[in-house]
Length: 308
Image 1: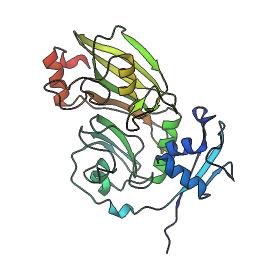
Image 2: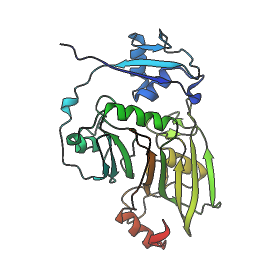
Image 3: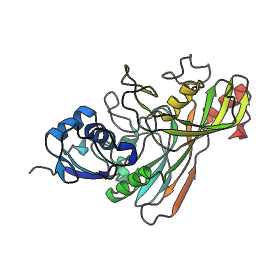
Image 4: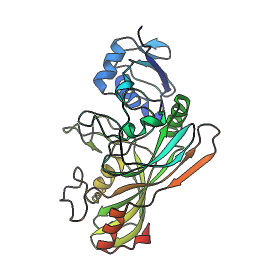
């Protein structure tokens, strides 16, 4: 018997207005643009109840519904993965992800992901090989993540992300002497024009991206900052700080400088997280201290451990 496809829908926000259907669908369904185009051509995508072409230009408030083909989630077997669960109930988990762990399976990372480590916790929602994943952190970024345990929890948490009700604060060490004590970077981000594996503020299909920062401590040549996300684009903090001219220390992709001795990753940690509980809306707040290797590196360059 054929396994039924998953049916999803979303309303087009202001930042999707004026954009092509295939572009917006790819971003919202977390699939490639080619896959989005195939779904549209197959007739399983509608805009306000009507089938549309992939080049259809969306308006704010349009309702896009789509089907995703079933995937064999059974290939996801539980694996031993280093992780720390800081909160758990029947709706969700909050995980303090260590650096070096990929969030979900992808080409080249078929095993040892966060999702594999959480299989026994009954995570659900999302689609394909990304069950429960509401938002992501880069492999080298440590810190707090929300994971849904139920389909309804996933939908409500994703909606909270869309309306910017999920608050995230990061700690980062920047390369250089950032002159201002605080500020905002408001620069749209999209795929790099030539290197599709990188993101850039110079893109043919950018999406709005806003990052706020404030300085916590300074030493000659380095600036320790707290960064708050207003939006959540791929590599947003790393791209925005590099665009300012002060990339994250140790960032091999956007930094343009060798990684300093004593640091095996880029210096970026998701330190604080708050959001409304999907069941009753009560506010949940969590904090994760800097990992030991980052605290030790601060000490090496002369920033006190309590600066964060």
